[in-house]
Every structure is written in C-alpha cells, then in structure tokens.
Length: 233
Image (cartoon, rainbow, N blue to C red; front, side, top):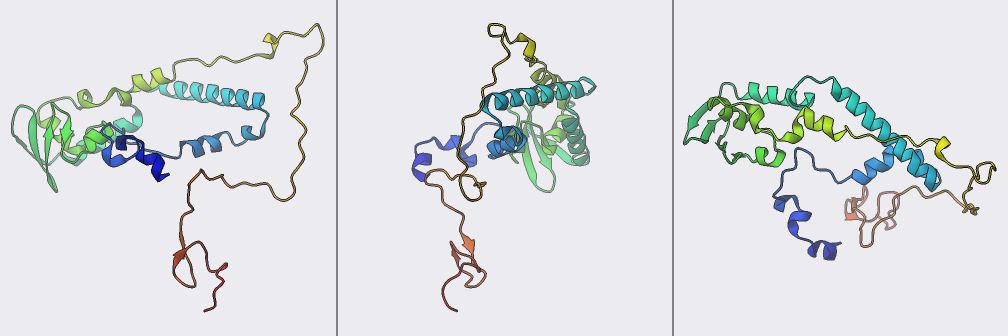
C-alpha cells in the first residue's frame, strides 16, 4: 500500500495537500454504503442484480425530484437553515474594513476575510465552498447579499436539475418471443455448496494489514487479545 501511494500525487489522496473544495463532505466508505444499499440484490443472478439496481435508482431519482419540487427557497432547505445560523452567530461581531474587499473580523479570534478572492483565514470557506460565519459577517458589513457568495451546488435549482433526468422502466412486453415459444429462463449454473459457514468478512486487499489491538492481559499492542493470549503470566 505504501508503494502504491508513493506513486500517486499527494493532492489525490492526502487531505493536507488537496487544494480543491470539499463542499462539507469527505467520505471513503462509498463502496460500503453502496453494498449496504443493494443488500438484497447482491445475492441475485447478474441480470436481476443489474435490473434491481436500476429500479432502486429510478425510485430514488423520482422521490428526490418530487421532494425538491415543493421547495420554495433559493438554497436547499438544509443549507438555507445553515445560512440563517451563521447569520445569527456573527450578528454582533465587530468588523473592520481594510480595503474594498478585505475585512478583519473580531470574533473569539481575529480573522481576515477577502470577499473578492472568497477567502477566510479560518479556511472553512475555501474547504466547504459555503461562506463561514466570518465571511457572512463581512458580507453584511459590505451591504452585500450572502446568496451571491454561495456556490451553485447548494442551490435548490441545481439540486432539482441533478434529479431531473428520467430513468425509463423496462417492460416485459418489449421482450420478443422466440419462435412463438414461451420465454426461456436462464437458470444460474449448478454449484456445489461448500462445507462450513459462508464467509461474511470483507476480503482484504493486497498488502492491507489488520489494525493492531491492545491485549487485555499483557496490555501490549499486537495481533492477539486476552482470549487468544498464549504466554503464561
């Protein structure tokens, strides 16, 4: 694993060197979440598996678009609520102007905000793409509109457009008959059931090491615990 990471640019795998915006979310468990989402479909043959995933995506797409259709806010409701919260936090802070776009915000700690560059020295604005409380306080001081400084990804219209495309149903009637005979059902191949319990744990990648644990008896870090400890005490 270390050799593999050394061949990649650091900004592609390390948060400390990533220069882009994260928009408030940074996850590494996408595969596990997806596997949990298709838990029932995973045991089906390949055709039923693909069709089951298609149906789930079709329903999710439709439900989210219908829910967003009733929104009457400029931002998504969750982000609208967050903007109201940061507005309230910095309402009584003292703001000092340094130039046309640069301000000093006197909060618990003093920070610098540059509205033109969309920069705050607390770095939350750059990381999330959403104005932090310091930035919003400076925007209000400048008689600006906070909505003008929010990325389009957080707007309700952008959310609606993400789920506006259709996933059409695939009907059985569209499948042609074969020479007038009944539909042929392809059964999965015969397999021999292995002895013992089926394996449920995830298979480790090449070079992946198990997390060391602390033994409850010897209180040392290693690959054993109090139940598997062999040495005499």
